[in-house]
Image (cartoon, rainbow, N blue to C red; front, side, top):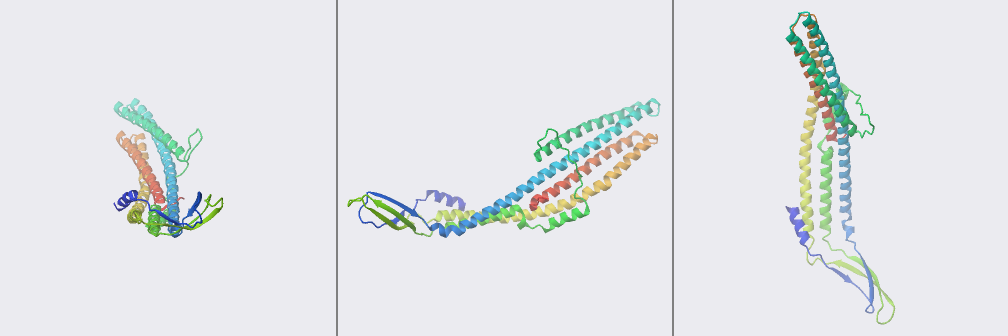
Length: 359
């Protein structure tokens, strides 16, 4: 409200007149004068400080934009890696389900199992084929998004060749945790940008306060064509602003309101950055732990159970239900493992954006 009131008063303010002191010999017919103001000399340090703060703001914005671009590329890349990996798992399950369907057909013909059980296996094979088709679509979409993220200009879509668990190794994870623990709110690009805005606003306030001081300007000119003849006369004098209608108060109030607002935004940015750092550290640790558990424990166990169930079914020592349960459990666990590893990659990318890091 202080800034808005100052702006309103500034728009209503009547400009101050300028007084000129001249010396001449005869009344001239023609006169040319120029006035060079020097009040800017007083305001120059504050204006320069505001300019430097603007550069600091631009630097913070550039750091943030580069980190955000890196995050977009990383997430697109690892999303494509995850989609390709999910497609490979879906194709593997589809082949396995087809093999089970062929086996069930032979066993049904031999009278070992009922036609109902055979049809259930065929249904599972059809579902696996449908899941593979869905995964193929997701993989193509992920590759298209990766092409956009890296400005791919070829007709053939790019293939993301990489490991989804990058960064989960002990050494890499220790380095990430060190970066997260050493980051401070004052180094966050958003906080640096807010500080730069506050510094610039404070400098503009000083400039507005200094501008209220009347400071003379130099007046020079020449006049000619007087009554006495065609001679000319040099003019030298001073031009002094007269604070007659206003004293620059509205401009100062406007600048003071902006400075107060920007100072408050710095405090808010620090609080937000502190909360974001805590959240980023928590997400990094928790997602790394879940990704490791899913990769090293859940997925191998699900594969082992599925392989054992298939072997027992092949030997006729178990019914169809445990096999179907094992297949579906492995598929669900595989998706969870991929999702947790992708979430860990997102946590890395978000941390880099927060601290302004572009690996």
